[in-house]
Every structure is written in C-alpha cells, then in structure tokens.
Length: 223
Length: 81
Image (cartoon, rainbow over all chains, first blue to last red):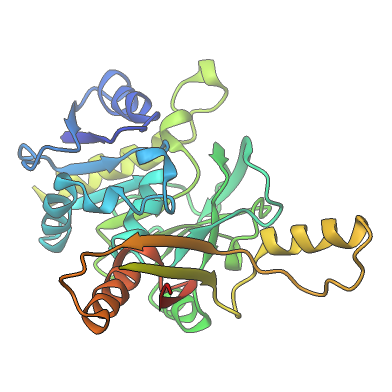
C-alpha cells in the first residue's frame, strides 16, 4: 500500500505518520511538500498533526489554500482515502471535506495526555479492524480540539453512522464526545487523537496500529 | 481606502475565552461587567480604484471564505472614516 504524508510548514507529526506506515507496518510511505500538486499514485493521503502556518487566523485556515489541497480535494472526490490527524482534522473541516469545526478546548488549556476512545462504527476503511467495544489508548495534544457543529449536522452524522471515534471521558468539551468523523462517502476521516503516536511499545501504546491495519485491509480488499 | 472587518463568535456558540475574561474582570473589581465575547479585528487597505460599494462586496466575499468560519463565526464589514 502506498501512503503519502503531506508536510506543511509547521507540521510536526509527519515523521510519526511516516514511521507508523513504513518502518512499522512495512508499507511504502513518502513525504509530499505542500507546494506539490501530484499525489504520486498514492492509496492514502495523510494530513499530519502540527501547527500548519503557525495556526494563523484559525487552525487549518491557511493550509486549505495550499497547492496540494486542490489535489487532495480531487482525490477525495474520486473516493481516495484521506486521513487527517489533529491539525489534519482541522484542515479537513476548514476546507469543507468534513462538517463542523474544532474550537478552543472547553477548559481553555492545551491538553497533552493519553485518552481512551472507542470506535463508534466498524463500517469504514479506518475502523474495520478495530474490535467492537475495544477501548484504545492514544495521546491527544491540542488546544483547539472541541468538536462543534449545529444540532442538525450532529443528528445527521449519527443517523448516517459517520461518527468514527468517541472519547470514553470527554477531555475537551467536544459535542456528543466526538473524537473523529467520516465524510459522507466514508473515505475521509478526521480525528483529534494520534494513532500514529501509539504504534510502538516503547511509547506506551500500540492501539493506534489497528487504525492503520484497517486502512491496509480496506485497500487490499479494494484491489 | 481603509476597511474594518469584525469577526465574532456566533451568539449560539460557546465562547470560553470571553467567559474567562468576564470572570477576570469581575474578580478585579468590575462586577458590572455581565458578558464578554472575544473576536478578531482586521484593518484592510483597499485600492481607491474601487468604489466603496465594490470594496465592501470584495471584503464580504473574503470574510465569508477566509476571515471567518461561517460554522461558528459572524462578521461585519465597515468602511473606516
């Protein structure tokens, strides 16, 4: 499987995503600079965590105008797998590929700690290998992670089974405990917790591997 | 021509920063402060080749697409005197 990891000025989890997919799972992964416009035949585009463009204006607001994002939007429209983690999730909401927005945490603090979350659906390319009801431990590291949308959008997300992950204990005030959401086509996922930073026993958890394994099995099933 | 754009959180959206500022003001001896909402202020210079109406239209478009996120924020465009 071929992954690409988009590097924006200010990305800081790009190497973790590259490591998780290549060194750890043994797949092909390469970096793409935000000025690139060719996704190099990739099966899955990862928008990594960090502080793209210094979080100027709003988190992810400037990144949506990067040259690469036009290619990512076309890729997503054609059914390509797009995975936004943390700042990547914020970028996906800003550019309209996912509904809602991530606002300042309820308690105002930047939160950096491990949390528990569950997959709210197994019907997606990102969650099909996650055991039902399993509590997964992954880090969060964000100041703006409070998922916010109007009631109608939230009702639609629930009715369409598009909530991918929920927090076991809500750390940031996210509406309906939402930690990750899927696009209508189920091929775009955004999540605030960091599965790519939970793929080695050395760092305390390997629960994030199930997300990447899901992607690999979805990709091989599609071929 | 100078144009001012005010971006503020929608009334229906929780503004934890504004609430924290309000509490701080209350605790420093201003119990009369009942509510604070924090937003952003942009001062934009626009070419005088545009009429004020044209400039306002341009800024409204920019505010809608870039300066605000319509999911949580509203904006106001004013020509500075």
